[in-house]
Length: 419
Ligand SMILES: NC(=O)c1ccc[n+]([C@@H]2O[C@H](COP(=O)([O-])OP(=O)(O)OC[C@H]3O[C@@H](n4cnc5c(N)ncnc54)[C@H](OP(=O)(O)O)[C@@H]3O)[C@@H](O)[C@H]2O)c1
Image (cartoon, rainbow, N blue to C red; front, side, top):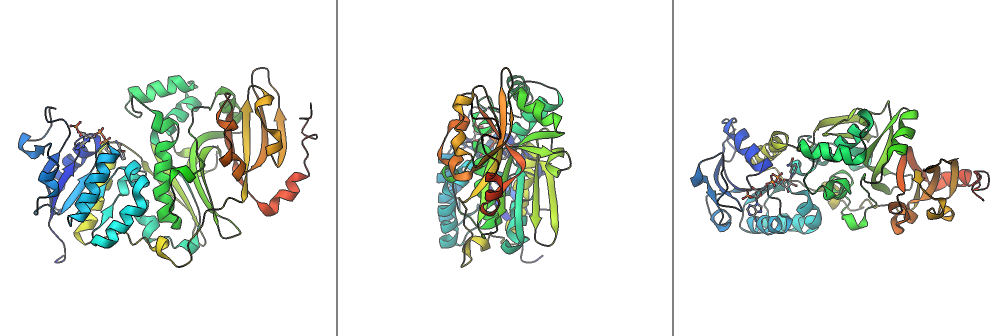
């Protein structure tokens, strides 16, 4: 095609993703794109590419007039932010995989794209090889998007799969994930939910046009999930997954959260195992669609970066159509969640916060209840993250205001909690 640009790439980072992209590009000669220079941090590390490709001087790339695309795949979000903003200001298009940096600065980066006219693409930053951002952006009109439900973190999904299928406890499953390279040596960002929350900020912007940040998000990781929880799930033919979910409510607003959730055996996400990611989109007329693929790793992530680079050949930009529409989608605080809570001692559970408690099972070491609680209450209070308490969403977890009066008829005393 005559309108295709020749791309001269300056790449920051030669780790898991950068090296993967380098190898993929070597096998894709039809794409008129070549890496001119790679900037890394440590100039003394041995590399699997010619030494004259590398520099540790960022301005060799950022101020080279021949380089028209910067690929930013480094593991330092502050440095990444400086690289990406300088590159855009210097008239270069940018591809990034750094979800933390993107999530923390999304609004500013959108404005910078507008003022510079340059493009910033980041398909690899959420669900790596699954082409979900561009699909949400281009294919799903806001009015038609009923809900999106996703497993966006491969490490936690791997750990949960091992807890369920091989009956490992949390620590054993985490150790295995680390040994196999699916979890970092410091796994905090993954297991406490931060990595998934950063990705969810990006997916919310492209699915509903909602610009938020992780401080405004109800989220948790998987560290509190214990053997009783796994047994309860298995008895009900369910599994537990860390699920990000957004859904349009009857009031037109959007409910959004990221928490462990029981998943029925007939749901698509039930089949997303190990390090895989999955996204289920429900739209007005097409019903459910399911995207499935590798959410991390050198080649899967590199392939998403490659797809963005290919899109730059014909000048592709995210239009942020949903963020720019006159009536913006808003997050709702006025809904309720049906939750399972397991705990060591009932004294740590604020029963008065619940709209209703529908089930209650006492055990020797741990007990659990199932009830409905206002979303706001969970967001504002932290009891469910402490004292060895575990909170997991029930499968159909969203309860709208209109459904609450029915539930209130089930009183606490009927549930046997008035001891
Ligand atoms: N790994 C995945 O599967 C995956 C999936 C999706 C998104 N991502 C995201 O992609 C990014 C890269 O991840 P990764 O797994 O490839 O990381 P990584 O293996 O730890 O590699 C990081 C690279 O960044 C370089 N670097 C760090 N600070 C730098 C700086 N200031 N200037 C230039 N280079 C610098 C390092 O240089 P040295 O080699 O000299 O140390 C290294 O080559 C992260 O933001 C990550 O969240 C990763």
